[in-house]
Length: 196
Image (cartoon, rainbow, N blue to C red; front, side):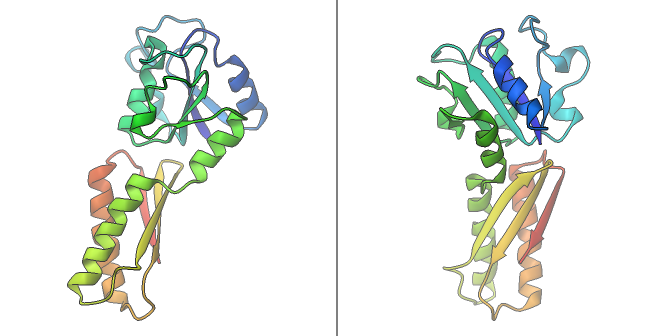
């Protein structure tokens, strides 16, 4: 798993980095340890969000700040790239929660792994709308149809649940429409795989 690690204050993520690396995960950073908040890696050599398929972003907060700190600038970039965000440490006043970030009080490795394995709610809602619309256009029942989207390795994987009587041509049309809707919502995904 590729984890973009940020921190509110210098050194706040040191223990989390050690835990993630001990669990075999690759840690990427927007700022080298001890470096100033500006400039970020994207301005000095290579943005981790552009260089590797990041699975999850983790920020560790040493203090309950109501706004992102300069060292947390990569969280905004991760959210714009539709990458799951986990917030650990002092999560009171979490400014990222309203944008879908998940606050955790326990094990950061488990929290990051769970975030990667989880169904992406916004993606799934968009895919489900496209699926139901396609079924409706074909005069097929669509109320129970669901599309679940997960993100891993930069790719989106879509699992469809459709009525068994749905013809293959309609399934194929739905896959194309879902792919288009997801690409519009998440243009940085490295690929989109739709299965039924």
